Length: 390
Image 1: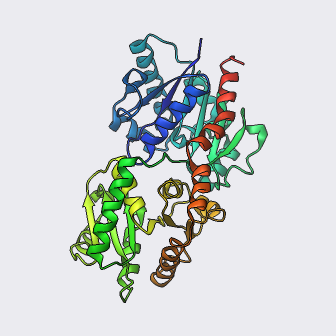
Image 2: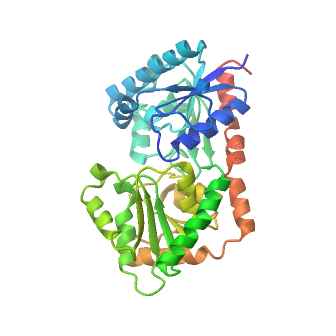
């Protein structure tokens, strides 16, 4: 009989549903009965493979890095797994965390974690803050050292785990590529319509998209100020789409809304957008903005842009900058000042006309679903061993 695994995530926005879907399909293909535990149903995953959890409660716990909150997060997770077992009449043998940071990089000793959780698990780190890793190394305050950790993965380009002592890890530490799902035919058709519409509205100017939940971390104000310093007919036309996080943005929200009131600047579509809309925006433009503030992890935008055949501008540090060296569709920003960003944006727009179809095809193989299926194999093999199935 196939072992059962619960795939847990506390977030339902951005690329989190996509990762839940991809991990569910890959774990099923690698020999598990995989169930998703999340706040919302995931498109493409049967409802009998999904268990819904209260969103606000888990989000509050996962955002708190205190020891008590970390213990309670694991305790709450155990309760939801118990509810899943009762609802489906099964025994969950193991856990998987596609967004593992709240469960893995926390402030509780690994031995305490092993007391509150008895199931083997695997997890993926989106970023590896150096201060947290140092604390984890010195004082054992990390799930990486848990005896229940069958394997821990981090995105390619994240160097934080490179010097982690193997003696402090129960399982292997693995680097994985960030991946994205292919664009649907509906998205591709919609992208063509949007591209023609925006080119007409802008007077055939270059197109830039900033897509997803608009938070302070997205660094949108820096983009808009760089565009404000631009003169001439080649000044880019900016397309923004996503939910506006008013509380997080503070006074930046008014600046952004006021900026888009001038129709010559671009277009803003406020509100949550679905996967197809997201892909349409990314595919319809010359450049996607991913030069985020104080963010050294992976935003998934390099992978998404590759699958949608667009170029992307990223930070000059962290995982994105490391991966960019091997990707023809990625431009690394020179600096965060207006002049440096303007030069970088210009280079990225020019780059968009130089990447060939063949190059995008190679990029899509690197960042596509098959890449995840292959990369996740060491994780699933380790988890099967921990379940006593190999």
